[in-house]
Amino acid sequence: MSNNHKFTNELKQLVTNLKNKAYSNSEVFLKELLQNANEAVMKLKKLKQEDKYKQELKDWEGMLEVYFDKADGSITIVDNGIGMNKEELFELTHTLATQKAKDFLSSNSNKASKLGLYSLFLVGVKANIISKKLAEDTAYKWTSDEDGFTLAPCINDEGSGTVIYIKLKDEFAKDFTNKEKLKEYILPFKDSLSTNLYISYHEGLDEKIEKIN
Image 1: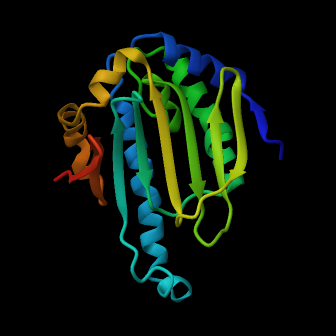
Image 2: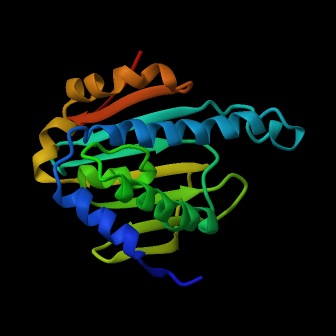
């Protein structure tokens, strides 16, 4: 499989629309990404009960994290779930995403919904995803550009899971790098997440982390 991939026509149109149109519910990307992350954690939690993984996962506890960086104007969604290999990451960002794009574009809606991963383009100008699947040695990095994406192996000494970095559009940087605003957006769907969720950020040189109850 090549490392460089062009967006399908549907994905290119979707990304263009999400980047340039104003949608009334841009914060929905948090729900979409965190629910996906929660699902990945639940898959690993189920495997933890199997004899094959009991020893490897005996100290593992699932968690979700939303990290924001005011100086960088970015937000990062992290989970320590089952992770994805190269083929699964391609499937998510290309094949499945194209079908979601078709469905959304045909609806002509002014509200964004059921976009999955590509909902990040409601608020982001670009994104990186790093994912490492359970029991595999190699992690893979997905990087968006204007016309498509690259997908290549990368160094990652951490355990399984997925990290989604989003460089925010200028008009969204203030809201989505604000702790209280993030809580306000997350709390309405927090009960749909069965995994502990944390918000983290830096205050000077100190890293702060708070559990969202």
